[in-house]
Length: 152
Image 1: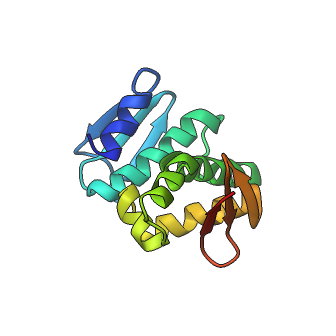
Image 2: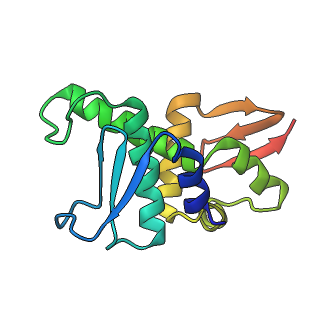
């Protein structure tokens, strides 16, 4: 099972994932309540990344923010994206990468089946949420210049 299948499988008891062939151009994913609509136009990597963000919307978004009219709308969008980054690129799996000798963000993007840009955004999200240096489950993370780790 790939990461997209595992992610959908983990959340499908609470979220209904629907693939659609008729999504409007430029709209690759949309959340309405607990329904996540995904276009069939996207490839695997983009779909996985959209699924992470849309799960973030189900978990954090209140009301219709699709117009991005207010600062609150933009804040909710940011929170959903950050939740998605942390869901797809989770710290436990980053530790598994380290243990397997996968050390660079470029190698990790392959492991997580995401784009390099998405991997860097996930690292930036952890930098915002946890700081430049932090410890987690016996590992020291340094996000000063990319991602370096060491076992404590």
